[in-house]
Image (cartoon, rainbow, N blue to C red; front, side, top):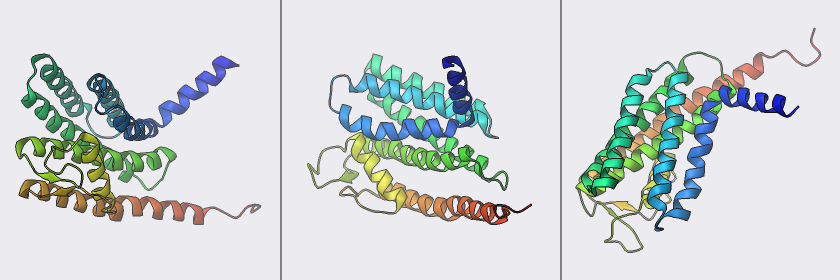
Length: 232
């Protein structure tokens, strides 16, 4: 019985890779604030980032997109992160941010193509809608981190305004901007930072308008097309 239940869980996991990616991304929202500022944070963040990259490759492999580009970006990101850690080169870490942002955007685009490829809405596509949102949020957060390194003082905040913003703060700004809520005390002040924020705001509006609204519409149509209960 235990082996049968394990087999069912394995089959369910294979059917919903987007759900696992979404779960891990949301877990990161809780993990980063708890670990940030500790001595082990760099190691934990690195391990968590590798897990996300593996899941991203799995998701891309399930979509129509090629895995070669995603694999190349993932390898480059891990290599640059290790180089920055072992050789103490901050510039390599910033390059890793740029590559990771590209990987997240590429995976988000692959998931959008996966959701738009037919007129059926599966449970995995609903998970993919959430996973795509978190991928976009993480991608722009990495872009903000690179922008902050290249243009110091790009972001101000109510607390300790002149210091560089932490990863959690940049991720908070990204989620607030992408969702359109705007509930944040972090302000972009340099022209490149403001350009990135405007691009993310536009991406958030278009994602809701084109992708999420389409999934909702198809779900409503599917329910309307079902025959009433008891109909022969």
